[in-house]
Length: 282
Image (tube, rainbow, N blue to C red; front, side, top):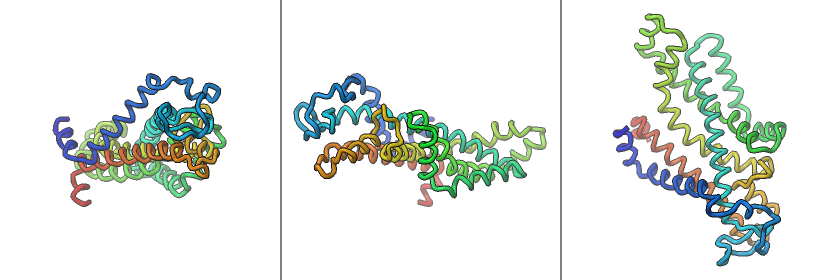
């Protein structure tokens, strides 16, 4: 762990990404302290509609007179929650399918590989839109939709790494000594593919946040919760572009860009630390 931390500190991009993520996580956790939840209710709004930034409203107001700053801070909670929760589902499915398809070289492995290929050839966004429409608009459904549609890439990477591990001598010795499939996968294969899974996790979080933003912008998010995507959707519907209300559009958009960029930087840094050959090739 000390060596890992020392190597990670040498990755300037990764350290910058961690710092940016720490700021957003602290804001999300402190949202109830900074702004009361009543400020999110339309009936409790007291400001003028689409008012520019002022002393009382640092980032202006939305079409209902609510503080844009309060919406951005509270929206961080939903966007980060969806990104992390959907990534956990995606990583679990992708790792399980990837290890199993790489370990079982006969019919089960072929079936899992074809299933992964099937999900890969289907465009992600149309599939997510269809599932979100069928399941309904709720925070849990958005998490499930993103999680079950974003795992094929992880499964492909894990399968390739599993095939490499399966060719190593200690796996052959484990089979000769009577180690079963579960023993081989849990004790030998999984520990060797976890660094790849960890590095890919941070990249998948960024994709999940972008997916949540896209679904919310299309009106398929939870209508009762504020997220950065729903803010962009409401701003577009309220005519913020034609009204020149840049303070309603830029903050949530910049937050999405900053968080996605931060997760990407952390993921690249983890990849370079856990696999130094990747950094040499790049």
